[in-house]
Image 1 (cartoon, rainbow, N blue to C red):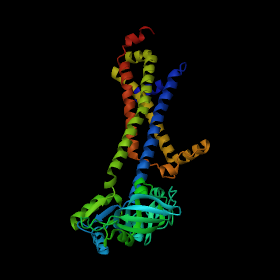
Image 2 (tube, rainbow, N blue to C red; image 1 turned 90 degrees about the horizontal axis):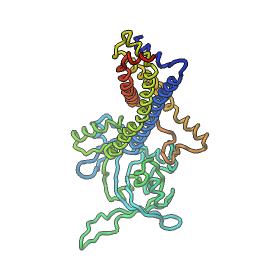
Image 3 (spheres, rainbow, N blue to C red; image 1 turned 90 degrees about the vertical axis):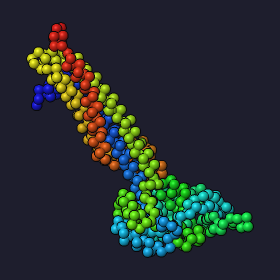
Image 4 (cartoon, rainbow, N blue to C red; image 1 turned 120 degrees about the horizontal axis):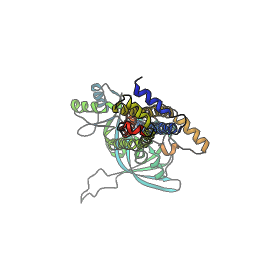
Length: 423
């Protein structure tokens, strides 16, 4: 062990007759520990929410949507086979028709509410392989409103918030009204539009506000009756990896000339906001470690004041001012690195066991501190990202190093004659 490191370790213990400096040292270590631990737990939960929300979005949206550049798709089977032949990453595909409509409910008490919605026509058998529409009709994974069956002909599945707005339940009759197909002119002012009565076969809880509020699902024949179309608008694709959507989409556009839309494009602003929120939270929580770094600074200043005579003796026996500087930097780093390592272990341990801890706290307090009805998840999502752990470690050690510079510099500038004059 180098001389400076040996002396730094000895100074951490303080004098036997004065344990106050040792107590302050322990408090400084605990300060860094708490800061690092808090950062790890909070960043892991935020990463967990990011992953869970991303999985929810990917589950409810097709990985890739392919449209014919001009007009509708009439030969659906041929279109799907063409896309699959050019892209082995495609594992499932299903046709869709989408239209805007006015929905109006007829309940046992008379006419219910009316609201606008997006009607999405799907092939129920194929769609459950592409998206999690079938799972949204269940009570799995924290859902509390999913119920019913996939739509058959002249049936409709409503998002649960949309159903609440209409006052609809399973079996409720829903009138779907779309724009008239014929052109408006002075001699032909247009009609009321297409109108079709459907029965509610299911209530969907997608755990996404836009899907639960704005979307309703029917089968393809019913969608064609509503819209008057004889083809489909596009084809939904599910890939082996959702993050391959961009290259696969580019390949389809270049080789086949079709138009593609990835799952990410419609949610770009949302994911960018999540990332910015995570960065801001990291910066805010780093201030906890900064406060602990000030504690380290004050601890080292007290050690320098206590060890003035020792510093004078060390200088007189040949230790250079640079050696004194290194001695106190090492002492500060020992405090900071010790707190960082303990904080890393405690933070990772708490993050791994966060749900049992939350359940215990909820039991003690008698409250549900993580309601699935509010957060849409039945457990706190946690994802430990080792890149985040590395940045937290770097930040803690860097702040610790900076906190040692002034006390170490003031110790190195101490004149040995002045230090020994009154001893």
